[in-house]
Amino acid sequence: MNRAGVALAAVAALLALAGCSAPTQSAPSSPGDGLEARVFQYRLDYLPRVLEVGLENTGESPLDIRSVRFDSDLFEAPAITERGTLLKPGAVVDLRVDLPAPRCSGAPGAESVIVTLTDGTEISLVPTDDQDTLARINDEDCLAEAVGAVATLTLPSSVRRSDDGAGASGWIDIAIAPEPTGETPLVIDRVLGTTLLSAVTGDGASWPVDRAIRPGDEPSMLSLAVRPTRCDPHAVAEDKIGTILPVEVRIGERAGVVDLAAGDALKADVYAFVAEVCGF
Image: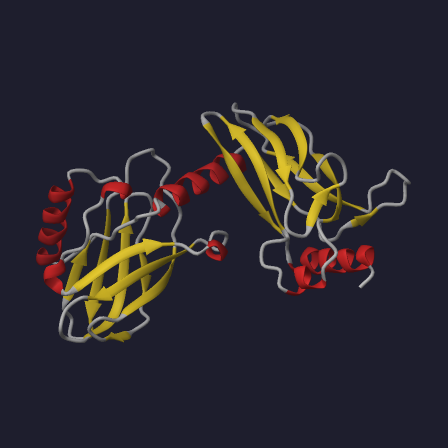
């Protein structure tokens, strides 16, 4: 990464003060520049992998910002936004950056934020990460990468309506396409319900699966009997994450949740399905 000498010196000094490069122990950005930085993420930005870089002008002069660059050892490349903004003294702005591919080497991350002003001045900061956002994102990214190396899980384009008298109102059929080669199996423990869809059996909170998938297996289907979680028109009208299915998985030493997001066609059909069953 190319940085001005001053920027490199500032980052080195701050990391020495921090004593550790882990996100949870990063030092606050230097107050001498009149600017402080933090990183965080809104829930709706999880899937699109967007990070918020918050900047606060703690100095006495306005800062005319031209671009912001976020660097971390947890990602393969820097994340940059060229959204310009004039940050007055005491003001705060949150800038969104698209995250690059993860680096899943297991090494701890060292972070920096480089703020470039319109006059060409570069201010180097070490952002705070109070909610361990970067570690969480890296864990989720690398789990999804490990899952993808074993099999591709694909949601359908519509809800399959049930007419077999088994008590289910509909089905979500998840296609499982294993990779041809590999050694580590993928275990799907269960699928969690959402604000719109629940399991027909049990308490409705989840679908127990407990299925092992190995590279070289034949393609298969995971069918989830679904019903509306609640019959409230507002649940559909105000939906944000009701068509994202959280899948609990294990693979090697990694375990956690991967989110399967419905495409536009399935999302629209889930809304129609809830309306049909609920009668609104």
